[in-house]
Amino acid sequence: MQKTPQEDPAMAKDWIACLTYKSVATASPGASDLQTLVSKARARNRSLGITGMLAFEKDCFFQTLEGPPAQLDLLWSAIRQDTRHNHIEVLSEHVVTSRLFSDWDLLMDERFLDAPMVASPTPPAVADHIARIVVLALDGDDTGLNALIASFADNGWTGDAVVTLLIEPAARALGDAWMADQCSALELTIALSMLQLAGHALRYAPASETIRKSRYSILLATAPGESHMLGTSMLADQFTDAGWQVEMAFPESEQALLNQLGAQQPDAMDIGLSDALPRRHALIKLRSAIEHSRLAAIGRPTILSVGGRLFSEAAASAASVGADYARKGIAGSAIPIAELVRQNRKRQA
Ligand SMILES: Cc1cc2nc3c(=O)[nH]c(=O)nc-3n(C[C@H](O)[C@H](O)[C@H](O)COP(=O)(O)O)c2cc1C
Image (cartoon, rainbow, N blue to C red; front, side, top):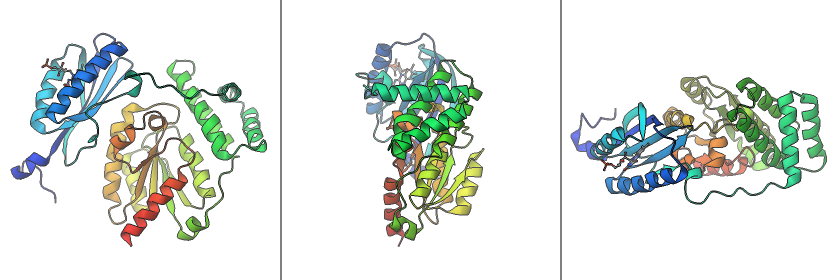
């Protein structure tokens, strides 16, 4: 069994303390206040050897900090006394052997930093289609929605295009509607399931002979406790069409996920967060699920991928959970994941 730094002080220098907390801003900070806070914090963190991430949402801060225990203690006592926030709640505090944020001196939610990111403009016709899809889904008009989605396929749109250009943006628009209190959580979940059902009509790139022969297998799971399963369900169609052996899991807990992973030992596992909502708070739990999945699959290492709105909007979050791959969206991940599996199998051979 691995020793802890307490049992073996010689190891202590290599250990990294890791702290995650949530707090409430005392006064709503503007973008420039946040930028000032982050740039000062970055400079100090760099000098202390501290890495981490900071997010700000709905008047709450979420921060993960990691670094040598003594330096982290020092910084933590300054942060705790900072009057710009209060109601500080420590969510997790532990010691680990390696950093998760090694490349970042402090990541801040991209929306608050530097120049605003310019989204590529959506052509008006496509924006119209998305708006119609949202209305039909919120109205519960499954017949209309199925007919509309099927009509794109009839007009030559590929499955990948319908998913990427219409279904995913519609899911995000539905998430935005919920965040703006324009629909209830139940209406959002129902609308997403309707999108999911309509999506079954789509077809994707046909099976690759190599993959079929190699019998690549994947476990497609929603993140433990995640109620939105649009992405996971649509991935099932894509991976099946691409020749993979597909199993699915909708675990309520991390343990249930690990049990299924241990029983099936697939070549790859994808864990999906909501495609409608950013779920930033789920990052910590997801990271734990990934860490434990690596241990559960120790005999036959599994390629671990993650996806969801969080990853499509802030690609850097991928590194924070320790996954091998982060999907930018629902479509198009069968090929890069197959390549990772191929390399993995070669290493084990
Ligand atoms: C939510 C929040 C997060 C912060 N994160 C950091 C940080 O990561 N690094 C840092 O040096 N200061 C951070 N600060 C600022 C510190 O609280 C403090 O102002 C700064 O370290 C200067 O400390 P001093 O006044 O003891 O010199 C943060 C402040 C807030 C409100």
